[in-house]
Image (cartoon, rainbow, N blue to C red; front, side):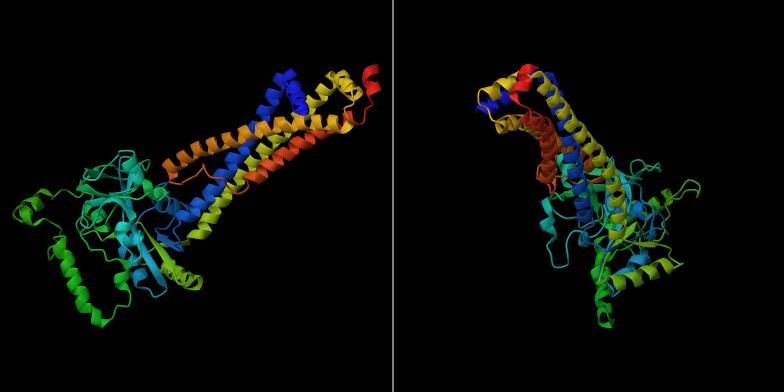
Amino acid sequence: MGILRVIISNLSNRKLSSLLTTLSVSIGVILLIAILIISAALQQGAIYQGGGYDMIVGAKGSSSQLILSTIFHYDVPIGNIDYGIYEGIAADERVVKAIPLALGDSYGNYRIVGTDNTYFVDIDEDITEVLSEGDFYNNIGEVVIGSKLAEEGALRVGDTFKGAHGVEGSNEDDHDHDLSYTVVGVLKPQHSADDYIIFTMIESVWEAHDIHNIHRPYYTYRDEDKDDEEDKQLDAEEYEDEYHYDEDGHHHDHEEDHDHDHEEADHHHDEDDYDHHHDVDPELTAILVKGQDIVALSSLKREIEGDLNHPAQAAFIVVVLRQLLKILGNGAAVANFLAYISIIIAALSILISLMSSMAERRKDVAVMRMLGASKTKILSIVVLEALVVTTIGSMIGFIGGHVVAHWIGKQLQETAGLYVNALQLWPGEMTTLATVLLLGLLSGLIPALTVYRTEPTKFIDN
């Protein structure tokens, strides 16, 4: 307790100096911890958001933009590809799973994504397991919403709304569609960009754009042979009957059949004023693909990109994510360098502060030595002063770093759907704190050794 009282007394005598030094350490540690958490969370989130898929197929353009707009629901989609590309991929023996995605519409700041239940579960899994409330969509116009939409009160089960063409910031024509959507379910938290998404069936997105067609999930293409043709035809007929498609492929409600001719007359417009044609072929924005192996996918990639009749690009998700993470890693390296510079400056501040205090307290130290205090005790007091300042600064920085990481994580989750759990202890944090404490300890050794090697008589004479 004697040593602790001396240390507290010495720090109290240098309040401003001790406070500024502690603040310097805190700022450096805040930067180091926050950067470490965000960097680790981004890498973990990017891998998790990839969903275990190997390849993504979409319109030609930037592969990074394709990944960001499709997987992270960030940035503007490049464009669309023919639905026939999906059909070919879904039937390919080299493909284990193929998931179609139709993007391009939104409701407010929330994007509408058309897909089937294979996006959420495998064939033998119960789709209701992914829901926290309500049911999964089974009809055109029904949607399930991400957990954050329900949490923020943007939409609830039973609400109806109309989607708008385009996404926020796309500078596209954002006119509302005629199709009315109804919320039938809420997804469990995914801790990903999906928590902010409105999901519906592919047919809903097509219907909103006056495209009348039927989507078949990838597993309906598996192991098909001639014996299955009759069953497929029956399935198609049942599907058409459920969604009220007539023999021409047009969608309508039975109770509105008597108004059909009148409605068709109302939909005739000049080509200059009418952008949505009933004879438009169905399209998708992207296809997530899981393959048997890298060799099989490589050959499939070459075939997709070599098809001039249906131009598209195929990108390996992990390769693009590594490129994106490398860019982020370079930025994090620079930030880490600046943070360590801050820590080194703080260590120098501790050194200068202690050296100054030694000059001021020479007689106090001499008296302690004359009263029997050993050199080791004097050395311990000086070193522990540096360690106390560094420890307090590190504790404040540790807490502050998690607070900053949590705040940045909230912004990342809202903009890019990346989940950052700042409440957990991330790998590398203890190593970072140990490094900072070591620098603080070293900064106290020089003035401590100066005192250790000086005789009491030299203090008194001065």
